[in-house]
Image 1 (spheres, helix red, strand yellow):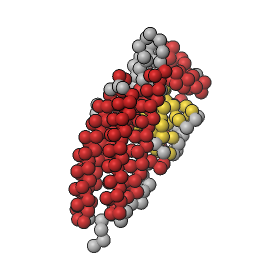
Image 2: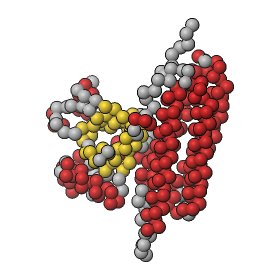
Image 3: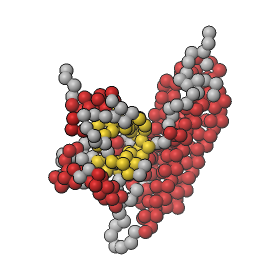
Image 4: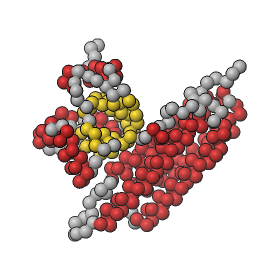
Length: 301
């Protein structure tokens, strides 16, 4: 079966450190891998991008098509995306810009690539501008040399997402308090940012625990029998965290009409419980996990 045009671009990109020929030659091109909103399968697409400070911007133009592209719907459902730029690959959180920020960033994108303005004129929909916020090397679970390092890096990322959620909730309440006039208050100015960071946190935490329970823990328990008690304790902690995570999702769903004082109090309570779990997990397991290389290797005969 002949290779599709998109797949040929992807393979050429990866084979040549991000350089491609044809209509994309000399352009700023990245590969964006999203998780299917319905299928859960990975999908990779080549996209033009524009740099803005420490962000990469991609515009969901779909070449001027009347509907948003599939990759945009995917990242709304699963904000954690994988980005390939040149020979580098990293994780990012995809956050669509809103309101004045969207207008400002779209103008910036148009100055770099005027074709986006032509696409916007041709369609009724507002072309989304998506900010790709890099997760940062200190929050990347890759690169650790033992399982303790893996755990610490994942926990650092989860803690950073909790900080994002609190900062964006505060910004939302500040914008709501500043609203004046007889009209209804606008939708949360940082609604998508808050939603995307919450989804990234909750989905990543769930995925992390599911992978541990289904694969990592059984393998470790069979190779290192002395870890079984610690693993059983961690599985119990996972059930507690799942409850807290569900409460957090319900809380954030009601932010548009929530009382700020009560909301902040409940968010602080849930966040503190989650941080306490992470602290307890580290205190209980790091000394043991530090003895296990990553990737794990069979114990010596």
